[in-house]
Length: 360
Ligand SMILES: [Zn+2]
Image 1 (cartoon, rainbow, N blue to C red):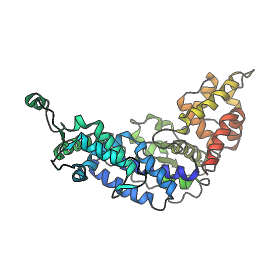
Image 2: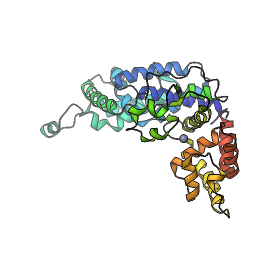
Image 3: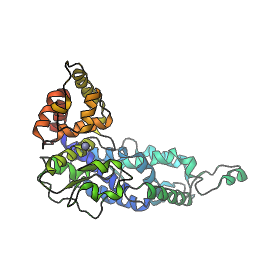
Image 4: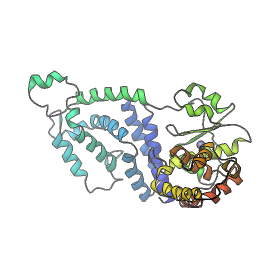
């Protein structure tokens, strides 16, 4: 992805992240419209296209949820025959009317054609379920006729259901009371801009990270052993203040970039291209004779990688660590050593960073 396109895609990602943190789906829809307006300000035409096209791709679940308040807010427009219910044909014809329009154009005030198209697709998909949202099972048997369309009442019932689920699964910030660092200029070039676009926050703590997050250990046991942490579902990086934090901080920045390089909840280290290079490098390492003593060859490498190398294979977690360790530049010897043993992966990481204007 070109540098500017990545930023636009990340803005879409950030918009959906903020929307997803709103437990009330109607408030979430308002937030969606407001955030879209703010984020798309100042974008070039090609960035606008990327932004509008990425929004619906970030999360199927959010599209599903937001389609309900969308339908309620635009009920009159959608209800072409004005009979108080949205028939399948009305939703389909509205959808057809959007075909051929540019993704970034506004089909309704504040709403892009791309997003409205996805809302309509979701409503069409779930039409049969939604039109009976307010009815009980016995209603079907008693009446022996199918309800023709979705009423406002159906939408309100479905919204209530959704609200319940969002309350359970919402992922609010782990430490909402701690503000993200305002000044990110100590991070490598391009990173502050990417973090701004993606909504990543660096939170510097005055106590050990595991202590500060003690209340969350049960949800995320990995916190207990981490000197620093990146939490993908809330895009928070936590580090303890102090000089020795430099390597740890850059390592976590690496995790956040791995996440940011692919909009949505995927990581670059999960991509086929990354894993192909890792496998090729690993094949060569496994053929080495004699085998290096990894505790001496890469003494400071993350233990997931070290034990993986010992075993001759790297699992998903170790591959994420490999990306972060290849990224970090706080431990210069380690960075050079890893590029020596993983030349193909190192090259791919460096190339990908360069293409996206990210320094290390
Ligand atoms: Zn890590």
